[in-house]
Length: 73
Image (cartoon, rainbow, N blue to C red):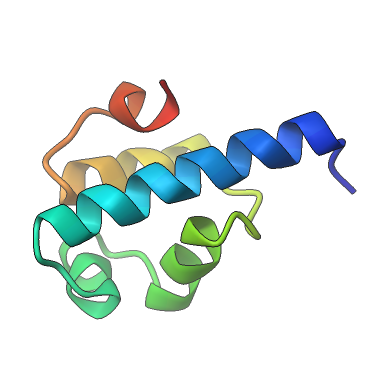
């Protein structure tokens, strides 16, 4: 189980991913197809419920035409 402080980080990253995805007009399934990540995994990430790997975050960032650092700032 993650400490509360770590959970907050995952929730904030998830919010950034969702906000950027929506600003680009992409559905979960569209983003999933673009970055080759299961849509359920992206949904869980956006909800702050997934302890994801950095490689997954990089794939999603590329799919959003962003840099991974944009999602973790």
